[in-house]
Length: 380
Image 1 (cartoon, rainbow, N blue to C red):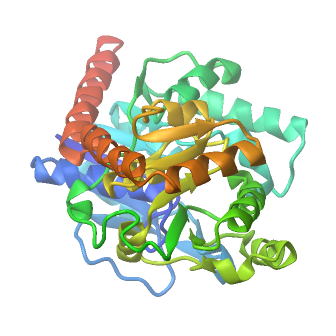
Image 2 (cartoon, helix red, strand yellow):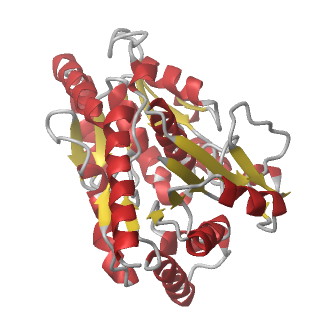
């Protein structure tokens, strides 16, 4: 099969969408499919793999780590028809995503759209506004885009449940981002192997929607009860400075390490060195960082989130709590003070993560592509 993936971000940017494209591309190539990736140009970055086609882009401020694509690109307009694509797969509904739809319509190629996020909840980032009128406009734009696709991919049931509120009525498949289990083959140390140092870890974007203010207040309660416990915050984002200030105000800055944005290999190293994964976001649409923590053999303490509950087995590989500081702190302390239970949960977490391997989910993605082809050409 010949696939074209279109997105508004790719390497060197690292986020959930980029990881999804990278991992599925890896799986598709391993199964001998062709994958062309169409994404914006990036400042001072050269691709080391073939068939990455870059749109001209305007660099945005360095701290944003993004470029704004300019989709007037004669070389791509010339190239796409000659690639003889079977499927166009869009990962965003605007800008480069609009180009994907244009090629789909002009060349009569089925369009698959992955609904990666709750777009109406992120208008303060890409529009600088956060009110109901703007949210309704965003819903309308995304609805009109999705309803012109042949098939929708949702990373979790939470997204499927949200689609009617957008007015979207298309075939949909739940398909999360896979995990590269080979990168988590062995832990450098078993959980709680150092009785004098217990490491909690959060991995992800450091931003308002991740509810990290709440997590730091939880950690203050935990730190007051056990002076061996430390917190590692792995990731960068617009709230990093404010979060560091809050750590100072809470008197726990000396017990927290902030890494800022780091390469994925370092993320793996940090997960392998940790004892317990903690996560407080309630706005997730997919559980990639949770699955990666599980692949590293880490037990988890999570704030209840419908999207994440799809991937975990509460009581076996994790503890799920309400968004209550005292309840989450108590759950963390109970686990780290029960090494046998903590290690058993870690083993169960790794076993659960194996269901989300690259080969397993890539096979399901190819099935979606074939269904989209069947639907598209049955209507013409």
